[in-house]
Image (tube, rainbow, N blue to C red; front, side):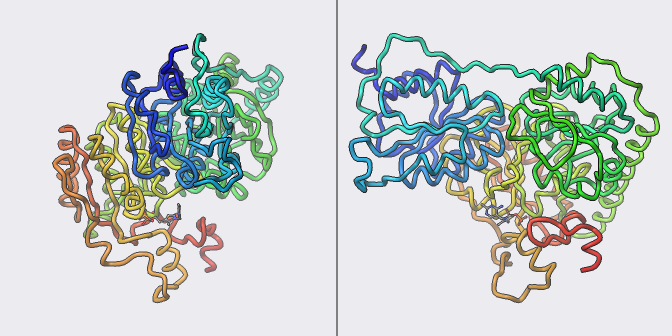
Length: 566
Ligand SMILES: Cc1ncc(C[n+]2csc(CCOP(=O)(O)OP(=O)(O)O)c2C)c(N)n1
Protein backbone atom coordinates (compact mmCIF):
# COMPACT_ATOMS: atom_id res chain seq x y z
CA UNK A 1 0.00 0.00 0.00
CA UNK A 2 1.42 3.43 -0.87
CA UNK A 3 1.07 6.16 1.76
CA UNK A 4 -0.74 8.43 -0.67
CA UNK A 5 -3.55 6.01 -1.55
CA UNK A 6 -6.34 7.70 0.30
CA UNK A 7 -10.06 7.78 -0.48
CA UNK A 8 -9.91 10.52 -3.10
CA UNK A 9 -7.07 8.73 -4.89
CA UNK A 10 -9.20 5.61 -4.99
CA UNK A 11 -12.30 7.51 -6.15
CA UNK A 12 -10.45 9.40 -8.86
CA UNK A 13 -8.59 6.26 -9.90
CA UNK A 14 -11.84 4.35 -10.22
CA UNK A 15 -13.57 7.14 -12.15
CA UNK A 16 -10.63 7.32 -14.53
CA UNK A 17 -10.85 3.60 -15.17
CA UNK A 18 -14.56 4.10 -15.88
CA UNK A 19 -13.73 6.66 -18.58
CA UNK A 20 -14.87 9.76 -16.69
CA UNK A 21 -13.21 12.90 -18.07
CA UNK A 22 -15.01 15.73 -16.26
CA UNK A 23 -16.32 16.31 -12.77
CA UNK A 24 -18.84 18.98 -11.79
CA UNK A 25 -19.62 20.40 -8.40
CA UNK A 26 -18.65 22.43 -5.41
CA UNK A 27 -16.67 20.44 -2.87
CA UNK A 28 -16.51 21.88 0.61
CA UNK A 29 -14.78 21.20 3.91
CA UNK A 30 -12.99 18.09 2.72
CA UNK A 31 -10.79 19.47 -0.02
CA UNK A 32 -8.31 16.64 -0.32
CA UNK A 33 -9.71 16.01 -3.78
CA UNK A 34 -7.50 18.86 -4.99
CA UNK A 35 -4.34 16.86 -4.43
CA UNK A 36 -5.72 13.74 -6.13
CA UNK A 37 -6.99 15.49 -9.24
CA UNK A 38 -3.92 16.89 -11.03
CA UNK A 39 -2.22 13.59 -11.86
CA UNK A 40 -5.54 12.14 -13.13
CA UNK A 41 -5.79 14.44 -16.15
CA UNK A 42 -9.47 14.97 -15.36
CA UNK A 43 -11.06 18.41 -15.41
CA UNK A 44 -13.15 19.72 -12.57
CA UNK A 45 -15.82 22.30 -13.46
CA UNK A 46 -16.15 24.21 -10.22
CA UNK A 47 -19.70 25.51 -9.98
CA UNK A 48 -21.21 28.23 -7.83
CA UNK A 49 -24.49 26.51 -7.06
CA UNK A 50 -25.00 22.83 -6.34
CA UNK A 51 -28.36 22.64 -8.08
CA UNK A 52 -26.79 23.97 -11.27
CA UNK A 53 -23.90 21.54 -10.81
CA UNK A 54 -26.27 18.55 -10.89
CA UNK A 55 -28.17 20.04 -13.84
CA UNK A 56 -24.86 20.44 -15.68
CA UNK A 57 -23.83 16.89 -14.87
CA UNK A 58 -27.22 15.67 -16.13
CA UNK A 59 -26.79 17.67 -19.37
CA UNK A 60 -23.35 16.09 -19.75
CA UNK A 61 -24.71 12.57 -19.16
CA UNK A 62 -27.56 13.03 -21.64
CA UNK A 63 -25.16 14.32 -24.28
CA UNK A 64 -22.59 11.54 -23.90
CA UNK A 65 -24.90 8.70 -22.81
CA UNK A 66 -22.34 7.98 -20.12
CA UNK A 67 -22.24 8.36 -16.36
CA UNK A 68 -21.39 11.86 -15.17
CA UNK A 69 -20.12 12.82 -11.74
CA UNK A 70 -20.93 15.61 -9.32
CA UNK A 71 -19.11 16.36 -6.05
CA UNK A 72 -20.58 18.42 -3.19
CA UNK A 73 -20.19 19.05 0.53
CA UNK A 74 -22.57 18.13 3.33
CA UNK A 75 -25.81 19.45 4.88
CA UNK A 76 -27.21 22.37 2.85
CA UNK A 77 -24.73 21.66 0.03
CA UNK A 78 -26.41 18.27 -0.32
CA UNK A 79 -29.97 19.58 0.08
CA UNK A 80 -29.22 22.08 -2.71
CA UNK A 81 -28.76 19.14 -5.09
CA UNK A 82 -32.22 17.67 -4.53
CA UNK A 83 -33.95 19.45 -7.43
CA UNK A 84 -31.14 18.29 -9.67
CA UNK A 85 -31.56 14.70 -8.50
CA UNK A 86 -35.32 14.93 -9.02
CA UNK A 87 -34.69 15.91 -12.63
CA UNK A 88 -31.93 13.34 -13.15
CA UNK A 89 -34.16 10.56 -11.80
CA UNK A 90 -37.09 11.53 -13.99
CA UNK A 91 -34.88 12.08 -17.01
CA UNK A 92 -33.05 8.81 -16.60
CA UNK A 93 -29.68 10.58 -16.52
CA UNK A 94 -26.89 8.29 -15.27
CA UNK A 95 -25.19 10.41 -12.67
CA UNK A 96 -23.06 9.73 -9.59
CA UNK A 97 -23.42 12.24 -6.76
CA UNK A 98 -20.58 12.14 -4.23
CA UNK A 99 -21.31 14.10 -1.06
CA UNK A 100 -19.41 14.58 2.14
CA UNK A 101 -21.22 13.42 5.30
CA UNK A 102 -20.81 13.90 9.02
CA UNK A 103 -18.15 11.55 10.34
CA UNK A 104 -19.26 8.37 12.07
CA UNK A 105 -17.45 9.61 15.20
CA UNK A 106 -19.85 12.57 15.44
CA UNK A 107 -23.14 11.19 14.13
CA UNK A 108 -26.12 12.18 16.28
CA UNK A 109 -24.26 14.85 18.24
CA UNK A 110 -25.77 17.83 16.42
CA UNK A 111 -22.44 18.41 14.77
CA UNK A 112 -21.96 21.18 12.23
CA UNK A 113 -24.21 20.71 9.14
CA UNK A 114 -25.23 17.25 10.24
CA UNK A 115 -28.28 16.04 8.32
CA UNK A 116 -29.87 12.71 7.51
CA UNK A 117 -28.62 12.91 3.94
CA UNK A 118 -29.43 9.33 3.03
CA UNK A 119 -33.10 9.91 3.88
CA UNK A 120 -33.12 13.13 1.85
CA UNK A 121 -31.76 11.58 -1.33
CA UNK A 122 -33.21 8.08 -1.09
CA UNK A 123 -36.46 8.66 -3.03
CA UNK A 124 -34.54 10.47 -5.78
CA UNK A 125 -31.80 7.97 -6.61
CA UNK A 126 -31.47 4.36 -7.70
CA UNK A 127 -29.08 3.62 -4.85
CA UNK A 128 -27.93 5.61 -1.83
CA UNK A 129 -25.00 4.34 0.22
CA UNK A 130 -22.91 5.73 3.05
CA UNK A 131 -19.37 4.31 3.06
CA UNK A 132 -18.69 3.44 6.68
CA UNK A 133 -15.42 1.62 6.09
CA UNK A 134 -12.53 2.32 3.72
CA UNK A 135 -12.60 -1.32 2.58
CA UNK A 136 -16.04 -0.77 1.03
CA UNK A 137 -15.19 2.40 -0.91
CA UNK A 138 -14.13 0.90 -4.22
CA UNK A 139 -16.87 -1.73 -4.00
CA UNK A 140 -19.40 1.11 -3.55
CA UNK A 141 -18.01 3.02 -6.53
CA UNK A 142 -18.22 -0.07 -8.72
CA UNK A 143 -21.77 -0.89 -7.67
CA UNK A 144 -22.92 2.72 -8.04
CA UNK A 145 -21.49 3.06 -11.55
CA UNK A 146 -23.02 -0.27 -12.56
CA UNK A 147 -26.46 0.73 -11.30
CA UNK A 148 -26.31 4.22 -12.83
CA UNK A 149 -25.96 2.97 -16.39
CA UNK A 150 -27.90 -0.30 -16.32
CA UNK A 151 -31.63 -0.96 -16.55
CA UNK A 152 -33.31 2.45 -16.77
CA UNK A 153 -30.31 4.75 -16.19
CA UNK A 154 -30.49 7.22 -13.32
CA UNK A 155 -28.70 8.94 -10.46
CA UNK A 156 -26.87 7.14 -7.64
CA UNK A 157 -25.48 8.56 -4.42
CA UNK A 158 -22.41 7.85 -2.34
CA UNK A 159 -21.85 9.55 0.99
CA UNK A 160 -18.30 9.98 2.23
CA UNK A 161 -18.15 10.46 6.02
CA UNK A 162 -15.54 13.04 7.00
CA UNK A 163 -13.61 10.65 9.23
CA UNK A 164 -13.30 8.18 6.34
CA UNK A 165 -11.40 10.64 4.22
CA UNK A 166 -8.15 10.25 6.23
CA UNK A 167 -8.17 6.47 6.29
CA UNK A 168 -5.97 4.54 3.87
CA UNK A 169 -7.76 2.48 1.25
CA UNK A 170 -6.44 -1.03 0.57
CA UNK A 171 -4.72 -1.38 -2.78
CA UNK A 172 -3.62 -4.29 -4.89
CA UNK A 173 -6.84 -4.87 -6.83
CA UNK A 174 -7.98 -3.98 -10.32
CA UNK A 175 -10.75 -1.44 -10.77
CA UNK A 176 -13.74 -2.91 -12.62
CA UNK A 177 -15.33 -0.33 -14.95
CA UNK A 178 -19.12 -0.70 -15.22
CA UNK A 179 -20.32 -3.11 -17.85
CA UNK A 180 -23.48 -2.31 -19.81
CA UNK A 181 -25.69 -5.37 -19.83
CA UNK A 182 -28.24 -6.13 -22.51
CA UNK A 183 -31.83 -6.96 -21.68
CA UNK A 184 -33.79 -8.79 -24.34
CA UNK A 185 -37.53 -9.33 -24.00
CA UNK A 186 -38.79 -12.86 -23.50
CA UNK A 187 -40.11 -14.91 -26.40
CA UNK A 188 -43.52 -15.22 -24.68
CA UNK A 189 -43.98 -11.44 -24.45
CA UNK A 190 -42.72 -10.91 -28.00
CA UNK A 191 -45.14 -13.52 -29.34
CA UNK A 192 -48.09 -12.05 -27.43
CA UNK A 193 -47.35 -8.53 -28.68
CA UNK A 194 -46.73 -9.76 -32.21
CA UNK A 195 -50.22 -11.22 -32.22
CA UNK A 196 -51.59 -7.66 -32.02
CA UNK A 197 -48.98 -6.01 -34.24
CA UNK A 198 -49.39 -8.40 -37.18
CA UNK A 199 -53.14 -7.80 -37.31
CA UNK A 200 -52.94 -4.04 -36.86
CA UNK A 201 -53.90 -1.90 -39.85
CA UNK A 202 -53.38 1.51 -38.25
CA UNK A 203 -50.35 1.24 -35.91
CA UNK A 204 -48.80 4.12 -34.06
CA UNK A 205 -45.34 4.04 -32.43
CA UNK A 206 -44.46 6.34 -29.53
CA UNK A 207 -40.74 6.82 -28.88
CA UNK A 208 -39.90 7.74 -25.30
CA UNK A 209 -36.82 9.14 -23.59
CA UNK A 210 -35.68 5.59 -22.77
CA UNK A 211 -34.72 5.20 -26.44
CA UNK A 212 -32.21 8.05 -26.30
CA UNK A 213 -29.34 5.60 -25.86
CA UNK A 214 -29.57 4.42 -29.46
CA UNK A 215 -30.12 5.65 -32.97
CA UNK A 216 -33.59 5.63 -34.40
CA UNK A 217 -32.96 4.06 -37.81
CA UNK A 218 -34.10 0.63 -36.61
CA UNK A 219 -37.34 2.20 -35.33
CA UNK A 220 -37.80 3.99 -38.65
CA UNK A 221 -37.36 0.68 -40.51
CA UNK A 222 -39.97 -0.92 -38.28
CA UNK A 223 -42.35 1.99 -38.92
CA UNK A 224 -41.76 1.70 -42.67
CA UNK A 225 -42.40 -2.03 -42.60
CA UNK A 226 -45.76 -1.62 -40.88
CA UNK A 227 -46.76 1.80 -42.15
CA UNK A 228 -46.86 3.09 -38.57
CA UNK A 229 -47.24 6.72 -37.54
CA UNK A 230 -44.25 7.83 -35.47
CA UNK A 231 -44.61 10.12 -32.46
CA UNK A 232 -42.12 10.98 -29.72
CA UNK A 233 -42.53 12.10 -26.14
CA UNK A 234 -40.86 15.43 -25.37
CA UNK A 235 -37.85 13.63 -23.90
CA UNK A 236 -37.76 11.08 -26.71
CA UNK A 237 -37.31 13.68 -29.44
CA UNK A 238 -34.35 13.52 -31.77
CA UNK A 239 -34.18 9.70 -31.73
CA UNK A 240 -36.03 9.37 -35.02
CA UNK A 241 -35.51 11.79 -37.86
CA UNK A 242 -38.28 14.37 -37.66
CA UNK A 243 -38.13 14.80 -41.42
CA UNK A 244 -39.12 11.16 -41.85
CA UNK A 245 -42.38 10.91 -43.80
CA UNK A 246 -44.10 8.97 -41.01
CA UNK A 247 -43.01 11.27 -38.17
CA UNK A 248 -45.96 13.21 -36.78
CA UNK A 249 -44.67 15.11 -33.77
CA UNK A 250 -44.86 15.02 -30.02
CA UNK A 251 -47.47 13.11 -28.03
CA UNK A 252 -50.14 14.43 -25.68
CA UNK A 253 -50.10 18.09 -24.78
CA UNK A 254 -47.85 18.96 -27.72
CA UNK A 255 -49.71 17.12 -30.46
CA UNK A 256 -50.73 19.50 -33.22
CA UNK A 257 -54.51 19.75 -33.50
CA UNK A 258 -54.41 18.42 -37.09
CA UNK A 259 -52.50 15.33 -35.95
CA UNK A 260 -54.84 14.30 -33.12
CA UNK A 261 -56.88 12.44 -35.77
CA UNK A 262 -54.06 9.90 -36.09
CA UNK A 263 -54.37 9.01 -32.40
CA UNK A 264 -58.14 8.72 -32.71
CA UNK A 265 -57.94 6.31 -35.62
CA UNK A 266 -54.97 4.18 -34.53
CA UNK A 267 -55.73 0.54 -33.74
CA UNK A 268 -52.60 -0.18 -31.68
CA UNK A 269 -50.17 2.11 -29.89
CA UNK A 270 -46.65 0.73 -29.35
CA UNK A 271 -44.74 2.69 -26.73
CA UNK A 272 -40.97 2.27 -26.54
CA UNK A 273 -39.08 3.37 -23.45
CA UNK A 274 -41.74 5.70 -22.05
CA UNK A 275 -43.22 6.09 -18.58
CA UNK A 276 -46.34 7.56 -20.15
CA UNK A 277 -46.41 10.60 -17.93
CA UNK A 278 -49.30 13.03 -17.81
CA UNK A 279 -47.93 15.46 -20.39
CA UNK A 280 -47.35 12.69 -22.95
CA UNK A 281 -50.79 11.15 -22.39
CA UNK A 282 -52.76 14.40 -22.25
CA UNK A 283 -56.18 13.85 -23.93
CA UNK A 284 -55.63 10.10 -24.34
CA UNK A 285 -58.84 9.50 -22.41
CA UNK A 286 -60.78 11.09 -25.24
CA UNK A 287 -58.48 10.10 -28.10
CA UNK A 288 -57.74 6.44 -27.48
CA UNK A 289 -60.93 4.88 -26.19
CA UNK A 290 -60.23 1.13 -26.28
CA UNK A 291 -57.05 1.14 -28.35
CA UNK A 292 -54.68 -1.55 -27.03
CA UNK A 293 -51.24 -0.48 -25.90
CA UNK A 294 -48.03 -2.45 -26.21
CA UNK A 295 -45.59 -1.02 -23.72
CA UNK A 296 -41.91 -1.90 -23.87
CA UNK A 297 -39.80 -0.89 -20.90
CA UNK A 298 -36.55 -2.07 -19.43
CA UNK A 299 -37.65 -1.23 -15.91
CA UNK A 300 -40.70 -2.76 -14.21
CA UNK A 301 -41.57 0.45 -12.40
CA UNK A 302 -41.91 2.38 -15.64
CA UNK A 303 -44.99 0.54 -16.91
CA UNK A 304 -48.28 2.45 -16.79
CA UNK A 305 -51.22 0.42 -15.49
CA UNK A 306 -54.00 2.71 -16.71
CA UNK A 307 -54.17 1.11 -20.13
CA UNK A 308 -55.15 -2.27 -21.40
CA UNK A 309 -52.76 -4.18 -23.62
CA UNK A 310 -49.46 -5.99 -23.31
CA UNK A 311 -46.36 -5.22 -21.33
CA UNK A 312 -43.00 -6.29 -22.71
CA UNK A 313 -40.07 -6.21 -20.31
CA UNK A 314 -36.80 -5.46 -22.04
CA UNK A 315 -34.84 -3.04 -24.12
CA UNK A 316 -36.96 -1.25 -26.75
CA UNK A 317 -34.31 -1.66 -29.44
CA UNK A 318 -34.04 -5.39 -28.79
CA UNK A 319 -37.85 -5.70 -29.09
CA UNK A 320 -37.98 -3.76 -32.35
CA UNK A 321 -35.11 -5.75 -33.85
CA UNK A 322 -36.87 -9.01 -33.05
CA UNK A 323 -40.21 -7.81 -34.40
CA UNK A 324 -38.39 -6.71 -37.55
CA UNK A 325 -37.38 -10.31 -38.20
CA UNK A 326 -41.03 -11.33 -38.45
CA UNK A 327 -42.90 -10.38 -41.55
CA UNK A 328 -46.30 -8.80 -41.09
CA UNK A 329 -48.83 -7.50 -43.57
CA UNK A 330 -48.04 -4.80 -46.09
CA UNK A 331 -48.70 -1.25 -44.81
CA UNK A 332 -52.30 -0.12 -45.15
CA UNK A 333 -52.62 2.43 -47.97
CA UNK A 334 -55.61 4.18 -46.41
CA UNK A 335 -53.73 4.63 -43.11
CA UNK A 336 -50.67 5.99 -44.92
CA UNK A 337 -52.93 8.45 -46.70
CA UNK A 338 -54.49 9.53 -43.37
CA UNK A 339 -51.00 10.19 -41.95
CA UNK A 340 -49.96 12.09 -45.06
CA UNK A 341 -53.04 14.29 -45.19
CA UNK A 342 -53.00 15.08 -41.43
CA UNK A 343 -49.36 16.06 -41.74
CA UNK A 344 -50.08 18.17 -44.78
CA UNK A 345 -52.77 20.00 -42.84
CA UNK A 346 -50.42 20.62 -39.90
CA UNK A 347 -47.73 21.97 -42.22
CA UNK A 348 -50.14 24.20 -44.09
CA UNK A 349 -51.52 25.61 -40.80
CA UNK A 350 -47.98 26.45 -39.82
CA UNK A 351 -47.31 28.13 -43.18
CA UNK A 352 -50.50 30.20 -42.89
CA UNK A 353 -49.66 31.16 -39.31
CA UNK A 354 -46.14 32.25 -40.29
CA UNK A 355 -47.62 34.34 -43.13
CA UNK A 356 -49.97 36.06 -40.66
CA UNK A 357 -47.11 36.77 -38.28
CA UNK A 358 -45.28 38.61 -41.05
CA UNK A 359 -47.94 41.29 -40.84
CA UNK A 360 -47.51 41.69 -37.08
CA UNK A 361 -44.64 43.84 -35.77
CA UNK A 362 -42.04 42.43 -33.37
CA UNK A 363 -40.48 38.98 -33.35
CA UNK A 364 -42.46 35.82 -32.62
CA UNK A 365 -41.11 32.53 -31.38
CA UNK A 366 -42.35 30.52 -34.42
CA UNK A 367 -40.46 32.94 -36.66
CA UNK A 368 -37.37 32.54 -34.52
CA UNK A 369 -37.65 28.73 -34.59
CA UNK A 370 -37.96 28.84 -38.37
CA UNK A 371 -34.72 30.83 -38.59
CA UNK A 372 -32.87 28.63 -36.07
CA UNK A 373 -33.50 25.72 -38.42
CA UNK A 374 -31.99 27.50 -41.39
CA UNK A 375 -29.21 29.51 -39.72
CA UNK A 376 -27.77 26.96 -37.27
CA UNK A 377 -26.23 23.63 -38.34
CA UNK A 378 -28.35 20.49 -38.32
CA UNK A 379 -26.15 18.66 -35.80
CA UNK A 380 -26.95 21.13 -33.05
CA UNK A 381 -27.71 20.18 -29.46
CA UNK A 382 -30.80 22.14 -28.47
CA UNK A 383 -31.53 22.60 -24.79
CA UNK A 384 -35.04 23.72 -23.90
CA UNK A 385 -36.88 24.79 -20.80
CA UNK A 386 -40.63 24.45 -20.36
CA UNK A 387 -41.78 28.05 -20.07
CA UNK A 388 -44.76 29.61 -21.79
CA UNK A 389 -42.83 30.78 -24.81
CA UNK A 390 -39.88 28.44 -25.32
CA UNK A 391 -42.61 25.77 -25.29
CA UNK A 392 -43.28 26.67 -28.94
CA UNK A 393 -40.31 24.45 -29.77
CA UNK A 394 -42.17 21.39 -28.41
CA UNK A 395 -44.82 21.82 -31.08
CA UNK A 396 -44.02 19.96 -34.28
CA UNK A 397 -43.93 21.09 -37.07
CA UNK A 398 -42.95 24.50 -35.65
CA UNK A 399 -39.65 22.91 -34.72
CA UNK A 400 -38.22 19.75 -36.25
CA UNK A 401 -35.15 17.94 -34.99
CA UNK A 402 -33.16 16.94 -38.03
CA UNK A 403 -31.29 13.66 -38.10
CA UNK A 404 -28.07 14.08 -36.13
CA UNK A 405 -29.40 16.77 -33.83
CA UNK A 406 -29.91 16.24 -30.11
CA UNK A 407 -32.77 17.50 -27.96
CA UNK A 408 -32.43 17.90 -24.20
CA UNK A 409 -35.52 18.99 -22.28
CA UNK A 410 -36.48 18.83 -18.62
CA UNK A 411 -38.59 15.84 -17.56
CA UNK A 412 -42.25 16.08 -16.57
CA UNK A 413 -40.90 17.77 -13.42
CA UNK A 414 -40.03 20.73 -15.68
CA UNK A 415 -37.61 22.22 -13.14
CA UNK A 416 -37.12 25.84 -14.06
CA UNK A 417 -33.48 26.58 -14.92
CA UNK A 418 -32.65 22.99 -15.90
CA UNK A 419 -32.13 23.66 -19.61
CA UNK A 420 -30.11 26.83 -19.01
CA UNK A 421 -27.68 25.05 -16.68
CA UNK A 422 -27.63 21.67 -18.47
CA UNK A 423 -26.49 23.55 -21.58
CA UNK A 424 -23.12 24.15 -19.92
CA UNK A 425 -22.74 20.45 -19.22
CA UNK A 426 -23.70 19.65 -22.83
CA UNK A 427 -21.16 22.13 -24.16
CA UNK A 428 -18.39 20.66 -21.99
CA UNK A 429 -19.34 17.21 -23.32
CA UNK A 430 -19.35 17.85 -27.04
CA UNK A 431 -17.77 19.77 -29.89
CA UNK A 432 -21.21 20.05 -31.51
CA UNK A 433 -22.91 23.46 -31.46
CA UNK A 434 -24.98 23.92 -28.31
CA UNK A 435 -27.96 26.28 -28.27
CA UNK A 436 -30.22 26.91 -25.27
CA UNK A 437 -33.70 28.30 -25.84
CA UNK A 438 -34.78 29.64 -22.46
CA UNK A 439 -37.15 32.13 -20.84
CA UNK A 440 -35.79 35.11 -18.92
CA UNK A 441 -37.07 33.53 -15.68
CA UNK A 442 -35.11 30.34 -16.31
CA UNK A 443 -32.01 32.26 -17.38
CA UNK A 444 -32.05 34.43 -14.25
CA UNK A 445 -32.38 31.37 -12.06
CA UNK A 446 -29.29 29.85 -13.66
CA UNK A 447 -27.29 33.09 -13.53
CA UNK A 448 -25.38 32.26 -10.35
CA UNK A 449 -23.33 30.04 -12.65
CA UNK A 450 -22.96 32.53 -15.45
CA UNK A 451 -19.40 33.10 -14.23
CA UNK A 452 -18.70 29.37 -14.42
CA UNK A 453 -19.21 29.59 -18.18
CA UNK A 454 -16.93 32.61 -18.32
CA UNK A 455 -14.20 31.16 -16.11
CA UNK A 456 -14.07 27.86 -18.00
CA UNK A 457 -14.63 29.57 -21.37
CA UNK A 458 -17.55 27.31 -22.22
CA UNK A 459 -18.93 28.47 -25.57
CA UNK A 460 -22.63 28.23 -26.35
CA UNK A 461 -25.54 30.28 -27.59
CA UNK A 462 -28.35 31.33 -25.26
CA UNK A 463 -31.53 32.59 -26.89
CA UNK A 464 -33.28 34.26 -23.96
CA UNK A 465 -36.96 34.94 -24.57
CA UNK A 466 -37.59 37.99 -22.43
CA UNK A 467 -41.23 38.68 -21.62
CA UNK A 468 -40.41 40.45 -18.37
CA UNK A 469 -40.82 37.59 -15.89
CA UNK A 470 -42.76 34.39 -15.31
CA UNK A 471 -44.99 34.40 -18.37
CA UNK A 472 -46.54 30.97 -17.74
CA UNK A 473 -48.06 32.21 -14.51
CA UNK A 474 -49.07 35.60 -15.91
CA UNK A 475 -50.76 33.87 -18.84
CA UNK A 476 -53.01 31.95 -16.45
CA UNK A 477 -53.85 35.13 -14.55
CA UNK A 478 -54.79 36.86 -17.78
CA UNK A 479 -56.91 33.94 -18.94
CA UNK A 480 -58.92 34.03 -15.73
CA UNK A 481 -59.03 37.84 -15.86
CA UNK A 482 -57.12 38.03 -12.59
CA UNK A 483 -54.99 40.97 -13.76
CA UNK A 484 -54.92 44.03 -11.53
CA UNK A 485 -54.53 41.83 -8.49
CA UNK A 486 -51.49 41.81 -6.31
CA UNK A 487 -49.22 39.21 -7.92
CA UNK A 488 -47.54 40.67 -11.01
CA UNK A 489 -45.59 37.78 -12.50
CA UNK A 490 -44.23 39.94 -15.31
CA UNK A 491 -43.22 43.59 -15.28
CA UNK A 492 -42.38 46.13 -17.95
CA UNK A 493 -39.23 47.14 -16.03
CA UNK A 494 -37.86 43.60 -16.21
CA UNK A 495 -38.50 43.61 -19.93
CA UNK A 496 -36.14 46.50 -20.53
CA UNK A 497 -33.21 44.12 -20.58
CA UNK A 498 -31.54 41.26 -18.74
CA UNK A 499 -28.25 42.16 -17.08
CA UNK A 500 -25.36 40.53 -18.90
CA UNK A 501 -21.94 41.10 -17.32
CA UNK A 502 -19.42 42.39 -19.86
CA UNK A 503 -16.42 40.17 -20.60
CA UNK A 504 -14.35 39.67 -23.69
CA UNK A 505 -15.55 36.07 -23.83
CA UNK A 506 -19.20 37.14 -23.77
CA UNK A 507 -21.06 38.49 -26.78
CA UNK A 508 -24.33 40.18 -26.00
CA UNK A 509 -26.87 40.57 -28.81
CA UNK A 510 -30.55 41.49 -29.01
CA UNK A 511 -33.47 40.79 -31.33
CA UNK A 512 -36.38 43.22 -31.11
CA UNK A 513 -37.93 42.76 -34.54
CA UNK A 514 -38.23 40.12 -37.24
CA UNK A 515 -36.27 42.40 -39.58
CA UNK A 516 -33.07 42.11 -37.56
CA UNK A 517 -33.56 38.53 -36.37
CA UNK A 518 -31.80 36.63 -39.14
CA UNK A 519 -28.80 38.90 -39.14
CA UNK A 520 -28.46 38.66 -35.35
CA UNK A 521 -28.68 34.86 -35.47
CA UNK A 522 -25.98 34.79 -38.15
CA UNK A 523 -23.84 37.05 -35.98
CA UNK A 524 -24.51 34.77 -32.99
CA UNK A 525 -23.31 31.79 -35.00
CA UNK A 526 -20.23 33.66 -36.17
CA UNK A 527 -19.34 34.70 -32.61
CA UNK A 528 -19.98 31.18 -31.36
CA UNK A 529 -17.51 29.88 -33.94
CA UNK A 530 -15.01 32.37 -32.52
CA UNK A 531 -15.46 30.35 -29.33
CA UNK A 532 -17.63 32.83 -27.46
CA UNK A 533 -20.49 32.63 -25.05
CA UNK A 534 -23.28 34.36 -26.95
CA UNK A 535 -26.37 35.71 -25.22
CA UNK A 536 -29.13 36.78 -27.57
CA UNK A 537 -31.94 38.56 -25.81
CA UNK A 538 -35.16 38.15 -27.75
CA UNK A 539 -37.95 40.57 -26.91
CA UNK A 540 -40.95 38.28 -26.57
CA UNK A 541 -44.62 39.18 -26.58
CA UNK A 542 -46.60 37.50 -23.81
CA UNK A 543 -49.49 36.88 -26.20
CA UNK A 544 -47.26 34.82 -28.52
CA UNK A 545 -48.35 31.32 -27.48
CA UNK A 546 -49.42 28.19 -29.33
CA UNK A 547 -53.20 27.91 -29.63
CA UNK A 548 -53.18 24.76 -27.49
CA UNK A 549 -51.85 26.59 -24.48
CA UNK A 550 -53.76 29.81 -24.88
CA UNK A 551 -56.34 28.64 -22.34
CA UNK A 552 -54.19 27.08 -19.63
CA UNK A 553 -55.53 27.06 -16.13
CA UNK A 554 -53.38 25.18 -13.65
CA UNK A 555 -50.87 22.75 -15.07
CA UNK A 556 -52.69 21.92 -18.29
CA UNK A 557 -54.96 23.48 -20.89
CA UNK A 558 -58.64 22.77 -20.60
CA UNK A 559 -59.83 20.34 -23.21
CA UNK A 560 -61.31 22.06 -26.23
CA UNK A 561 -64.91 21.37 -25.19
CA UNK A 562 -64.33 22.67 -21.66
CA UNK A 563 -62.48 25.73 -22.92
CA UNK A 564 -65.33 26.76 -25.20
CA UNK A 565 -67.78 26.67 -22.26
CA UNK A 566 -65.53 28.96 -20.22
C1 LIG B 1 -38.47 25.13 -9.90
C2 LIG B 1 -39.75 25.53 -10.55
N1 LIG B 1 -40.54 26.44 -9.93
C3 LIG B 1 -41.70 26.83 -10.50
C4 LIG B 1 -42.11 26.31 -11.69
C5 LIG B 1 -43.43 26.75 -12.31
N2 LIG B 1 -43.19 27.50 -13.55
C6 LIG B 1 -43.43 26.94 -14.74
S1 LIG B 1 -43.09 27.97 -16.01
C7 LIG B 1 -42.70 29.22 -14.97
C8 LIG B 1 -42.30 30.55 -15.50
C9 LIG B 1 -41.12 30.47 -16.39
O1 LIG B 1 -40.65 31.75 -16.72
P1 LIG B 1 -39.70 31.97 -17.94
O2 LIG B 1 -38.54 31.06 -17.88
O3 LIG B 1 -39.37 33.42 -18.04
O4 LIG B 1 -40.59 31.52 -19.20
P2 LIG B 1 -42.02 32.13 -19.63
O5 LIG B 1 -43.06 31.27 -18.98
O6 LIG B 1 -42.05 33.55 -19.17
O7 LIG B 1 -42.04 32.02 -21.12
C10 LIG B 1 -42.79 28.81 -13.65
C11 LIG B 1 -42.45 29.68 -12.48
C12 LIG B 1 -41.27 25.34 -12.28
N3 LIG B 1 -41.58 24.75 -13.44
N4 LIG B 1 -40.10 25.00 -11.70
